[in-house]
Image (cartoon, rainbow over all chains, first blue to last red; front, side, top):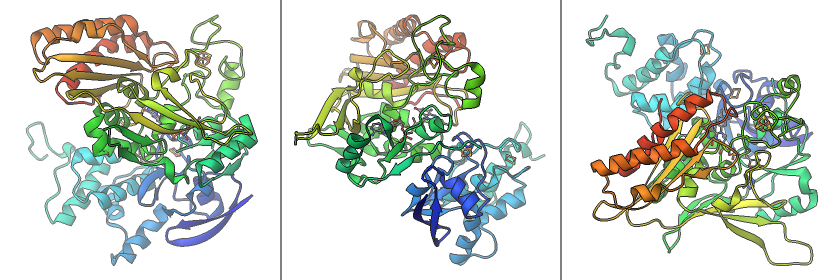
Length: 178
Length: 347
Ligand SMILES: Cc1cc2nc3c(=O)[nH]c(=O)nc-3n(C[C@H](O)[C@H](O)[C@H](O)COP(=O)(O)OP(=O)(O)OC[C@H]3O[C@@H](n4cnc5c(N)ncnc54)[C@H](O)[C@@H]3O)c2cc1C
Ligand code: SF4
Ligand code: FES
Ligand code: FES
């Protein structure tokens, strides 16, 4: 057993866990933060994505004790963080995913939204290509990604006060809205 | 759910402390950098070290700097994301920036390091599997077993070097700086500097010549020729995340008259060691980039690569398909390097 400190969603916590436990295991089975999902558990799917000092990392591959001294944000921290910045209700990313129906089973969603949040923090006006690149490590087995990309584009457009780009599926071959 | 085997974790703050731990624990200890290769491998029970020594708190191992001689020196713990987005690397060693940018997905590039990539274990579809899966198969030569499922009756493991930065660093003539524990009774640092070409051996079980307890501390890339151009080409299943099914790094030195003065191509994801494609300078040197003669020379080089590069059934993906893609990727990557473009891949 190893005793170490973790900063999770702004809370400074003392944790006791075996040295061979991953950050994901500590989050889910010690701290009860089950928003981070255990998918493949070996780096392939991105369902366990959390932000470490603002960058998306895979908590299933990160030894928990090595996260001491870094700020961890899980999906549970997204809304409180948004509110702490003076926002209202859910984070705009969560709101946009909701409005766009950017989910089916929802398993990929926490990781997907954290990758999207990190992207927008660093680059508030990403192109569609940059959105694809930023979400490349988050696999969705259900949605086909269209509404997910649309949700991120909706955040970008609303922040800029412009009409969101037409999602590819809503236009026919001639670009006419269907 | 894949649990890790039990181990003790050490997090030394200095290289000396880390080396002392290796001196103390010998082969019971393994270094961990980003953990993106070692953690899945430990979950699969391919490695079960008693002590895992994290290098993450050793600040001296991180960073990219350009020396007064124009050499690039990259600390082994520098992340792949930092290598890919560094303007110094993009300018001086474009092939390395491109290769790093195509490794795995964004989260893994934030975690994974250049040193960990150089030191990556070889891969094979019969090996990178859970313990349960490997038990059902009856294991193989590389781990716990006695036969090879790639070369039936073969006595040698041919698991593939699958690290994208390896061929890139080879075309750049990189040097690796290792430091090992100081032997008892000696006081000076146990440093070893080797050309990256000399790191590899043709054995899929362990494809590197290293000394016990040695840590890769830095990767040095000499200043390239004035007209240096480079590009990386990578064949993989999904452009978003997968390991290479074939990777090729290209270096072209181009004179002021646009004629090629030197060239190198290195291939990876074939067998245990990444390899230079031979005799390509005979075809390319003297050709003016962009000319018809250059294009025909590129065609002949692609043929040479086709003859020399033989993908095996070690990686997932049909070996015949991968072989047919060898000349395609070599040709496209050479043209990309010539134009100062790249990387070459599909999404
Ligand atoms: C889904 C997935 C996709 C991937 N795709 C790719 C890909 O496309 N291309 C690719 O090349 N890799 C890929 N990888 C593998 C891996 O992410 C990268 O190779 C990464 O660079 C490994 O670096 P690391 O710091 O995480 O290494 P670690 O896992 O920490 O270490 C790897 C090995 O090197 C040793 N080691 C690490 N640092 C040192 C050092 N300084 N000195 C001595 N030994 C050391 C460790 O003991 C271990 O044996 C992928 C991994 C996953 C999970
Ligand atoms: S090539 Fe693959 S199957 Fe053959 S011994 Fe090596 S790891 Fe095992
Ligand atoms: S659970 Fe971590 S990447 Fe799949
Ligand atoms: S909504 Fe099911 S995995 Fe994405």
